[in-house]
Image (tube, helix red, strand yellow):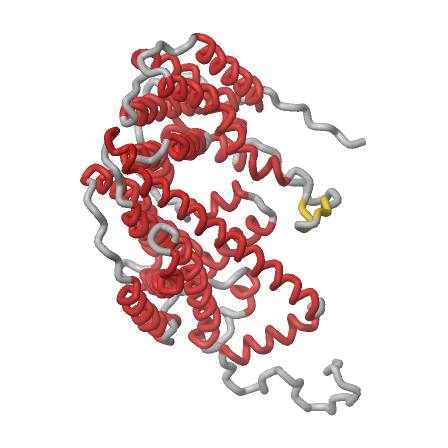
Length: 539
């Protein structure tokens, strides 16, 4: 065996980097051995590493600047709402900082609980866990890496939140975010010990699922808090980022020390480490492959299936009714879909109640419509991933897509009649009875947008990459990433035009041409959903 030197090994001489037989291997030694083996299969140069780091830092700087500017634009829009105060209440833009912080913290905590944070991949589960190595020293580097990553991501989020308050406090808000990020990661690590409490390991997936749902519920709570604060129209208290930064940083460091302690890391069961490592690996591979549907499944999946109370399926006769019932139960049994549907209704109303301008309200209406279409396409995404039900019912590709239109259209119609009248009434206008035919015309188009996004083509990584000054990307990247939001915007264009007519000409009837325009757009999108190109057979 070669040792990387010109001197041969004598018989009985230990191989450098390997533990001597009879000695107890530590986690640090096992990691060093793995690193040495990985180095023999690696490659690349320092120049390529420098280029990757440079591109990453530049991309991060661009994203941060865009986030800060977006926050400043939204805050400035609400700050200038005093001129529109006669139309309704006005929200103090300083309230957006705690509201956005609550929403971001809830979503991040839910993702952290689902991904781990501490876990081992397939190779680690195969080679590391069966060894008698010291478990705490083996897992501590991963825990510290997650804690450092949480602090860095929190600092970036704090800079964005500074755009809602005072940009001069950018540094203090970065410290607030860094402390908050460490707190969230440390709490997520501590929840991994739930498995050895109560009735044993079988309860771990259920409790982790409940904890993740609690984090997701914070997002809906933030939207509801936004609406309540706008209705109360009270000024926000003067923030003190210095005190908050000190408190969160100290709390983050203390919780990080507890989470990285050997007693905590050693108590995490191997089954939990394998499950969380596999989920993190799936999320990483989906992100690298730019598979947004796969990434969404990983981040919103409830985990291992559990026994549910059976529900009566009376009245379900025929394949179309079976698809409708299955998709309805999928939405009702998925807390994240219910939260997303609630936020689809709440976000446009929250900005309208806060006194936002018509342009910003229109952007939030498009955002809410995208969330509603995404909820309507939940069954289609599940069928695209595992079409077992469609095959059992004998539905073809075209009929299976059309069978999912009724439920998605019903959700889109409910979103339209709940959002549009209230948003327009806050600006002193109304569509009157025309809202019902407009909702009926819009519903199939908005539902089709969600189903089209669910069945969109995946990127073909086998074809040559497209080389641009911004980097290389696979063919079909634009359609795979932007197809869902783009189609949703197309479906909402006639409705936005109808709302603009109602605002510009109060009291006027809705022109029949706009209603026909909405019907035409929806009809085209339904035709796109029903069209399934035949697969080409390579000779």
